Image (cartoon, rainbow, N blue to C red; front, side, top):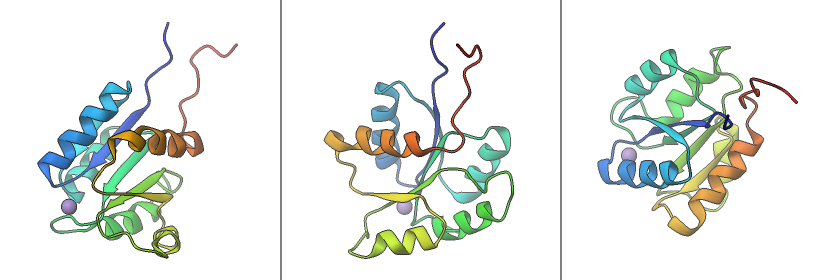
Length: 136
Ligand code: MN
């Protein structure tokens, strides 16, 4: 029996960014669920709670900040690990994203050399890590 793979929800409206993130994450062995806007993300979260959400800030309609606010107000998602992905990260943004309810952020464009480690770092912090089915 292999350990259950961590599930990651990627919310991204740019098809190329989504494809790159999905490809890299799948190569690292993660199960990837994707959504192209906040409403689709909410629908996917109703079906299944992932170990990590990579959430684009700039989305059509409800943006990533608004979606995170909404999720944090729901007890089911209060401790979900949510990481912002944005091309507009600037010095001091760490604090801003943390204050908005994110666990951190990963700047875009995605750096293929460091993306996997960044994701691993946030998964390690996950408060929703899957429990082994047969504890030792
Ligand atoms: Mn976007």
